[in-house]
Structure formats: C-alpha cells, structure tokens
Length: 407
Picture 1: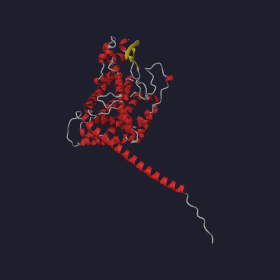
Picture 2: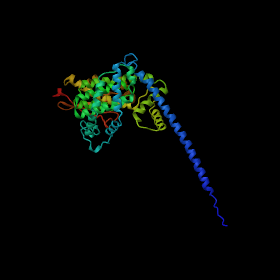
Picture 3: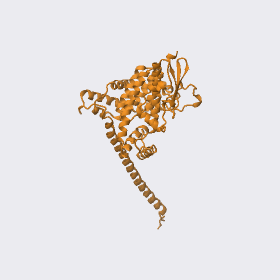
Picture 4: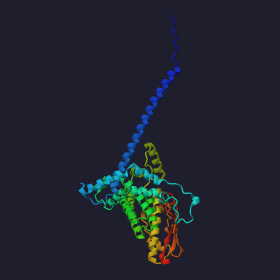
C-alpha cells in the first residue's frame, strides 16, 4: 500500500491572496468615493452655471426687447426652426475640428521679422492658411448665407431669444469671424459688411459673455487696410460694440453684489473662455479657484486681465478712426494730438479699465503718435503698455495712413 505525500499550501500565498483581495476592495471603495465626489462637484458646477445663466442673463436682457405675448407666433416659430437647423449644422464635429486647425498658432520667428511693421503680419491666419481658410468658407457658404439672412432680421420676442442656445450662438459667432477673415483675404466688401452685422447681432444674444474681441478688432484694422470699410463704417461698428459693452458692464456690476453671485458669474464666463474641453470636475474647480482668487475677483468691482486687453485693442481702432476723421476734416491743417483726441470715441467703461490698470496714469496722448513720412503718407505708431501683436489675429503697432490733403 502506497502513501501519497501531501505538501502543505504555503501560508504566504494565502496571505498574499487575502491582501490582494483587501487591496482590490479598498481600491474599489476609494474609486467609488472618488467617483461620487466627482459627480457631486460636477452637479454643483452645473447648478452654479444654470443659476448664473437663469439669473444674470435675463436680467441683462430685460430692457433689450419689448414685452410681447408668451406664445410664439407663426413667424417666430418658423424663425426658431431655422435657427435650430443652423444650430445643428454649426455643432457638427467636422466644423469644430476645422476651426481648431485654423486656430493653431505657430510662433513667429523673430529673425525673419520685417523692419516695416506696417506691412508684416507674422501670424495672421489668412497669411498662413489662405487656401485652407478659403476652402473652409466655401464649404460652409450655404450655412453662412443662411446665418447672414437670419441676422438681417432682428428677433424682438424675449421668449424666442430664451429658446436660442447660448452655446449655439457662440459657435455661430466664431464661424462668422472666420468668414470675415476670409473676406479680408479675398477683398470681398459685401461679405465683410454682412459679417460685421452678424457679429454684432450675435453679440446681442450672447448677453453677459463678451468673447473674441481680439479677433474683431484685428479684423476691423484689416478691413481698413484693405479698404473694405471706411472710417464711417468703422466708427459705426465701434458704436454698436460700445452699446453692447455698456449694457453688459453696467448691469454686471450692479448684479454682482455678493460673493456667491460673483463666483457663479465668473465660473460660467471662465469655463467658456478657458475650459472648453472635458476636464475632471475637481481639477476644473481647483483651476477656477486659483483663477478667481489670483485675479482678486472676490472684490467688487474688479478689472480682469482680459478687460485690460480689450480696452487696449479697442483703443487702437478708435484712435485710427479718429485720426482718419480728423485728417478728412482738417484738410492738411492737422494739430497733434488735439484734433485726434477731439474725435476719439473711448467709452467711459474702457477708460476706467485703463485708468485702473495703469494706476490712474491713463493718458491717451502718451499711447500713440502720428507723423508724416512721405507726401500723402503718414505713420500711426502705438506705444502700448502690453503686447497685442502676437497670436493668429495680431494687432500691429504701426500703420500707414493715407493723407490725400498733404499732396
């Protein structure tokens, strides 16, 4: 009779198995807790955003539209269906991908810069992607023409406005700016004018969020460069911009009285400007908190960095327009800087921003100079406290100005 030799099961294997199971259970519990925490933060962020948009948006627009029936008319219903169709098209992933490609910024190589800053555009989109931009505009021509047609008919019903999705309006806004850029490259006056109108139209319905001002100001400069618009049209565009800006800033300051309201408002605008892609809710919250306190947004009122940049960019266009108007009026007897400053349209809201950021030493005359270089040609040069000449839509600091009265 044979005996079978039994080998004892190693105790360390049993211990390792138990430890592994315990670790898996522990990790599962921690992962569940972390997931629950992320969900809770995400829900809080959604509530904060929804509350800000429901409270601040309608209040900003409360005086913008006449009160009418709460029932949509047949005409309004048809308009809404058209806008919903446009919204579905502008939300197409292909369009988003193409816009991202066009917006890619390649660093300017400083060694290749021309000494003539008035004619050199290091990163202008239509200089780097002229064919791609033209093809993008062509492939979306029908959609853009539909947008321009709808934008030519103002919406006067607040109920219909409330049904328009702000994200959709923002994408429409971006698409219009790209078409304006292409119209500069193709020197198409009609499309450029339609783009300006659609830009301001979309700004009315984006209410308290004021995006893409750098692109807009750059395009106004380029429109003047290519003679797509004259000083009168540029001045009218600045006035429309200022009208929306005044409504936004004045009511914004009156609304943001308590800390939680300001936090909700700035979280919403921060997300649209800096956090378009998907991010962990906890990471998004941490980045926002750093941004909120670093920029001292807990105080009221406050001047954010993007407001300072916007004020400088606006200033360059306003000075150029004022100079063109002064040259036309004075017929060669231009006094600098008095005649230009007399024509300057600088809204008090932006002057306040500049004065605050420049420690109260804001002086328009110190930020620019103009001199005759050749008969009939002058040079407008800006000396700004911040660089605005980089990016895919840079604003130059030197411009050639025609002065026919000097001939």
